[in-house]
Length: 463
Ligand code: NAD
Ligand code: UDX
View (cartoon, rainbow, N blue to C red):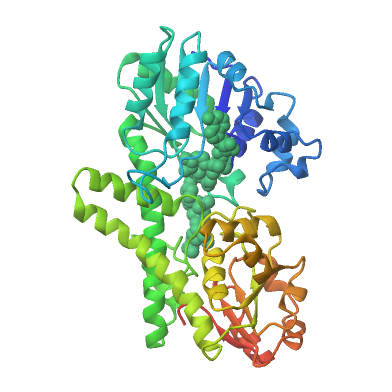
């Protein structure tokens, strides 16, 4: 079957960029991205492509090329479902905040709503593609909903997890390591797989398009994120040992990374990983393992999260201890709030937890981030429910440049590895701060020797 109309439910960090690239690379396919969130759709339709709701290098150019040609953003979910032969579900699957599995399991209510809506609206056969990250065997639940409330329409369900990382979404989508498509082993299932392979084959070479059964595909996504996060917790565990032993974690990472069996990527010690995926997906994996009674498996993976929480807490503790065991009424300047550079996403960013710890110690936090708004920062803190909105607002100051954020500070803490932080006039920053002036480099991006020569007391991670 040749696909000419695609609908994607969910215009978020995955749905938006993924569909923009499909539309750019497949001008013959009409791609409609729909969302319940009217503001989000209005932002995607903003006449100025610079104002689209997600910041990703290169994305606004692709959107401006394809939008209105074969890429559309709409709130009319029913119409887009009705017209499409292939429907991607790309809605959020956050950790449950209530009921059974609270704090661990993935909340699948948005997925179920999509399945029910598709079942209600569809009048012709459709291929439904799981793009969201889902617990293994979710396709079974989706199939059951579609079959039991449908209008006699045939559905094929594919799993096509997304491996893009934020900040590099466009390059990851244009040049993926692999595309993974899981489907039914029946001939109808194989035809559906082929239809999706043909979409990607417009720009991805065939040897990078991998097909499996549905369950392997679903589980591979959770596994990939667990392995990636595990590398970071492993190197972060070593960073603490390095600090006790005069070893240097960057040197250790380089030395082990040259072993081709280990590999050099994803070994950067940090203040702790953030982002919407790693923690959520590992907690989900732990929950799934427990639900099958696999307690050793569950405990093994849970340790990745325990280590990451420890690393964030260790960073804030280090700031307090180094500042003579009190930060009350002291100004701590944060460089960065996003969970990594080149994104405006702050979900699970280490900065939120470090700020919360320091505010508990009555520190004043002044933040500069090139892409994150004050409203976002305050709502991130409010979400923790440690204190009310008014209190959070009074402890957190936001500035539109780093020099003002650092003025009169006792310490600077680097929370995000934005490139511009390395280019600053650090002498100017030093001159404007209280002395002794401390730098806590949670990303190991600054030149320690240079800063120490200026007069700073510098502390990185793992050295
Ligand atoms: P997001 O929160 O940015 O976007 C999800 C969107 O879905 C929201 O705009 C929401 O309004 C919309 N939505 C929810 N229910 C809806 C419904 N019933 N009908 C229409 N719209 C609805 O989430 P995201 O970061 O794009 O993640 C989506 C999925 O992709 C998650 O499962 C996530 O784990 C996975 N994923 C995310 C990333 C990433 O880097 N963010 C990478 C790979 C996979
Ligand atoms: C991750 C996966 O990489 C991606 O494949 C998946 O589709 C979604 O989840 P993302 O969370 O967007 O992507 O970014 P990623 O580059 O993985 O970084 C996650 C966190 O780990 C960030 O806070 C980053 O700063 C941190 N990190 C990453 C480290 O601390 N050290 C590293 O070596 C790499």
